[in-house]
Length: 138
Image (cartoon, rainbow, N blue to C red):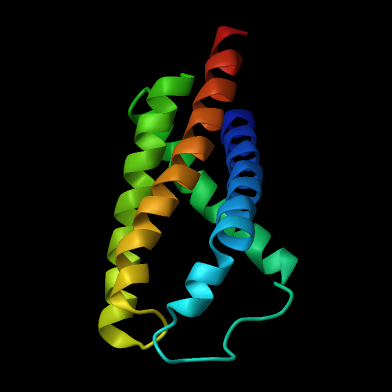
């Protein structure tokens, strides 16, 4: 894979993750997450550190871009499928490890969060697959 495709996929994926994630986690489910904390309060920042969030999303979107290219899923539908699977597996594992070791969220959030991340990563994978599919045709 060339650098242009990797950079483009990662950038498109990161922006999609940030937009979709903001809608899901800050708009639709923020009250749910607050109500289902595992007894720990005051650990969330009032304003996220944007540069740190951007780096995190770029890293995850780069991983997703590599998975999409490796599986030759450079279309909207195939990118969506790979993105949804990768997102679910990353967050299912991460959330259950955090549940086992911390009090941040209760079991309800631990189960729901990977499902919501499936939506976010599916959207990101779809956009990456779409853009990479168009770059391949050039």
